[in-house]
Length: 321
Image (cartoon, rainbow, N blue to C red; front, side):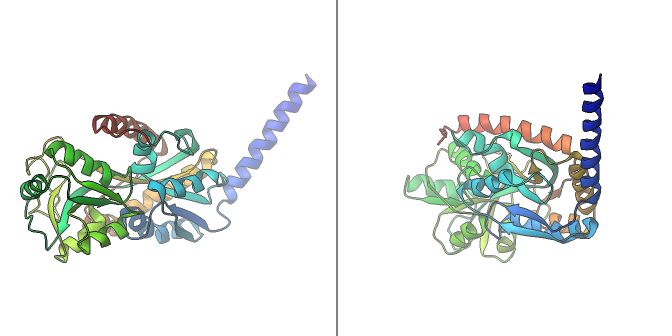
């Protein structure tokens, strides 16, 4: 009986300590890791919400870029961090869904993460340099078939949704092109602007300013419907490429073991920020849609995405590395 009372008392002490830590949180700045270079959707979305999250949490929120290895470097930093709510990551479709099928030996697993909320979802866009003779997806396909195997495309990284979207495009259109990965959308888009590649499929937000400036030409979007900001750009289906609906997503995650009270507070603050008209307007101008689901809903969504992309990778014939 004494041992039972001692165990109950110990449990009570631990619960009180946990509640105290959660109540005091946050007591110092919070870092959001961006597992990509500046200039891409992961980076843009993080910076749009950081200051507004800081205002609601009462502590500064710092965005830290850790690019490389298809998001693996930044993601590995997150899972090594203390589960105290002070280190978060803007997880996304690449490292948190596609990579499990693309890489045979990842330094992390799904159980290493505590999902918080979906932040933004966006379509991808097929783009070429404005100097390209291709003025439609059909013309681009004709070019690729004429010079079979001589063309190339770049992406924000191996295993990211732009890479997989381009592989699907090649498969659906029966064309060939060599893939060159970069450490994020920013440098990849810069290379396309410099005329170094034939085409790229990119997350829409990072290409949108260059499309609007007339430096890139959008040939098709991967959404089921046309994007209001680019009404003249057809969907892949309208461009003659079936079964090419792809939505890229980005969301906040913490290390597994982060106290539930901290996760709930982060999710609540993020939902408030994502409901702001200013944030929704900025996301909309990027061609994106704001999220704001619950931690449980986001976790279920990620599980479903991981399974869906496993089937996609297998169908594209991309063997694990």
